[in-house]
Length: 297
Image (cartoon, rainbow, N blue to C red; front, side, top):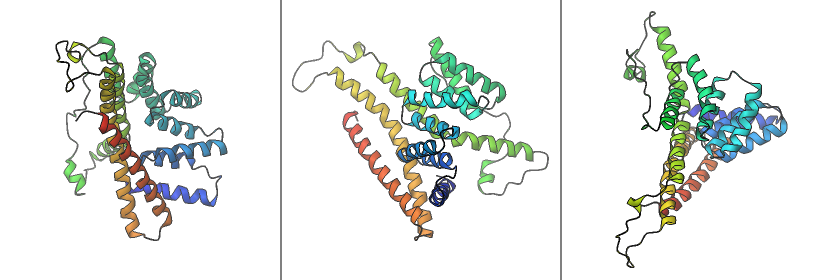
């Protein structure tokens, strides 16, 4: 977790404490979302919308929060309100396209995502979803589109070591590629969320076949089959992937916050945020324990 996200939360909270009418509710809520403090993010959006009913950025962030919470119809309501006013937002259209895909409204998803790819051929997330849609429609096995550059601009190890100095000739290309890749990485948790949601949807719609209904299975007190229990196990296994990813994000945010707190032990804002994150970790771990008791090992 980037320490800057934690600093942004701290800064925006401080600004609102000084003046609740400062229009920083949306960036605060989005920072909470990135730290996986979804309840705080949602509450912040509602406060912002109560203060500023026309605050479209707050509605957009609220829509993203609802997607993370699998409240897809609520997300649609908020995002479509924003899209009626803002029609050329690349990020908004990608989020809506992803949402329509989750809702199995493939025509709407394709319309938005195709426009995105036409404007930005390097938007590989949009290309991935388009590929998934096309394969689902055709019934073919899913294959994710991967970006394989023909020519590496520079050595990633040199960037990490901070020893790379691009020449004048390739400096612009280097900066553009770096910006593009960082932009894609910002939404990696949402991509993982989308995959986990797909697993859950497929599990919920799965019709158990003869493989799961062996007619010659001996019926005794040690061996039995329960269809409802099997559905619960499949659903739990799908949810586990999503919740474990959520836990890793919160753990990372908590670790970053504690490191900052070690340097500033008197910082009450950081201390309060650490408590929120610790509480969130406990909530997720309880949910994991419940699902692990259902899901087969």
